[in-house]
Length: 272
Ligand code: R5P
Image 1 (cartoon, rainbow, N blue to C red):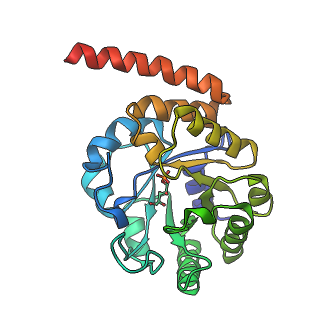
Image 2: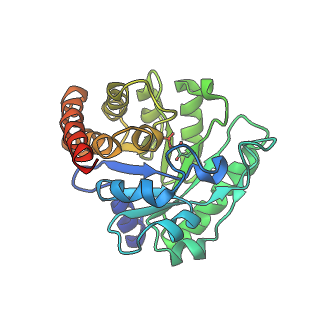
């Protein structure tokens, strides 16, 4: 790996812990104004100091993130579909590598839809993006998307997806947590982060998922809804951060969440 590529990777995966806390706020690229992400700046600003990197589109980056931020950027560069269109998998590349460089990104991310009618198209887009990333020293994160078929999230399917992405040259992969997750990480020669998926029932569920994913070989999380759809998003990201970078157990992280939540409750009461 060349120096530039290594330097950018170090802005996504912290060299001192070997772990990554990525904040995903790219959902609008196909969902529009998702619940609690209606005004991106409002959602992003309080969370940004606690994330190593933020994952989003160029439109939200330019309009809603202060350029003086110390948090790295992983730019979503695929899209072209919407939740109300005929097919979520029919994605292409939306953003040139030149624009990604202009935005000083640490990495770029693109979804692949393996097992769908668009697997070839999205995998060839990944290959093209890797070619460009290698040329300019920009790491590429492949995202193993499942569209509406959330039931596809099992170790057999996800290990096939992650391995194919790594074989094509992705520098890291984002996938879902699943049972027997170690089968997914063991057979993928590049680092894996997990998406959070739809909001889970309790905070402990989220913390356990992050903890278990790391225990089973993930380098971290690229999480969205389970952070910013929480009623206490800052407490949530700080609790997850404690698991990712500080070795907290889910129970310890939940205690931290409860303490921070109490502080927030008092602060909000004082304002009202
Ligand atoms: C899909 O919209 C994106 O790839 C998200 O970045 C990804 O699903 C992570 O977000 P969440 O934790 O909300 O699933």
